[in-house]
Length: 343
Length: 251
Image 1 (cartoon, chains in turn orange, yellow):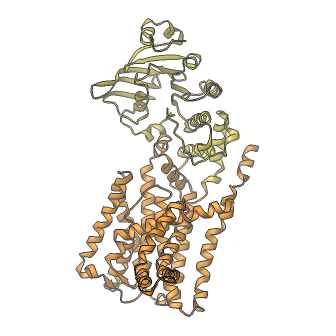
Image 2 (cartoon, chains in turn brown, yellow):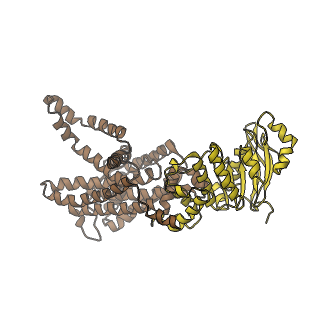
Image 3 (cartoon, rainbow over the protein chains, first blue to last red):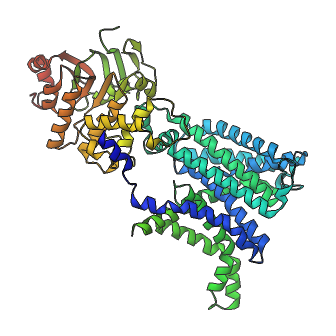
């Protein structure tokens, strides 16, 4: 078939090709950053900040998998953060400090929670799905708060970071950074493969038109549930990393505000591109981190009293900035980049 | 094997006091193009929803290929060879025309629980999809986003998707609805080619199309089948004329 050969060699839309370098650039930046950090003089601070960026990037990307590709708006994704973190914290408090046991337990627990809650939640749609995922996450939050043996509301401090096959190399901030980057890259490549696979095409089709998918012989529920489980496991992995980064675990990891922040990161970066969610998470966390200083610098013309009050209440500026970005940058940061590369 | 591919036995469906499907008995023979006509509100779409599995009947039986499918979910009926198109165009707008069809090919060729390997480059899926697009005359538009196709092209695409599920019976719910004159001629031409290959149940308002395509016609009025006959027999039927009086002229 001559038509077919033409078809396969047909070039992709040009904007897509020009943005193909973006994920490579993102990961290259993460790879180079620690070397720059060591020359910055505030090495520990920069490393821990960027480790957090990658951890939240991993969680946001996992959310993008169900939200951006599967159209499942989960408002309880932080629950998986909590499951991953508590798996590390609880096991460590019983003397099981090796990641070789902690991580599989965290992944299995996340998968189980996702399968059970997903099987129930996916029977609902739209706003009901949002509310039911929120309800399940709140259940887990209150459960964690009531675990007196593991610190209850106050959470628990890890005796040390996880060992890896008996070695304590994660105590080094560079090593933890590298391990986090490896997890993020691995999860990205798995996710990228999934969305381009047979499975991913059914998932994307279901997002577009579920009835149509049934009419050609698919049962969307199975595909959505499987995606929900995969996504939950990735977020659980992010939870393991977060516990290690903070060397502390608390119910605050899984508040509904945290779930909301994750949705915000995905929307901020742009739905349905995977690396967009990572960029969104980076933008969110860096903005949160540096906005007080930016506000302070940008208000030089005000008197000292007003200026310090504004800097203290930087969230007053943070909120409106986020709203403006969502309003005027449709498609998030990825949307802006796409339009830019068209022009 | 049964002499009819699809058989409806005493099918009943009511919304409150309104009987939308009233004791419908109908059989579609293998190889024929069986049209269902009737005035607006006669319950044609409700009937097709019950056959395809979107709605379930209150009572009665649906036999497909000798098997009782009355309580099977839609996706299982599709896998048994019962495909449908929708009255309101139902495609995946952000997918290319080729991908819309390739997805239907994928549904019946191997497991879709495969997480690795680029599906867009599976040539067996793409080649089969391309053939179905050529059958309906959309080959040159394969790479176009389905949402950007003209209304008539979308209807052709629906036909291609329906065909790609390799049905024994294709249920077509007003494939000409909303198409322009030129477009409807093209769809009718496609249907003429298809009718020799598969069994089709056609619901259509366009009487010219129905009488030029159908082997047999059933007339549905207020949920009841008042006549099933050849096109000529239907034209001559007094009861049918009465039902259509003031509605529209038959042929």
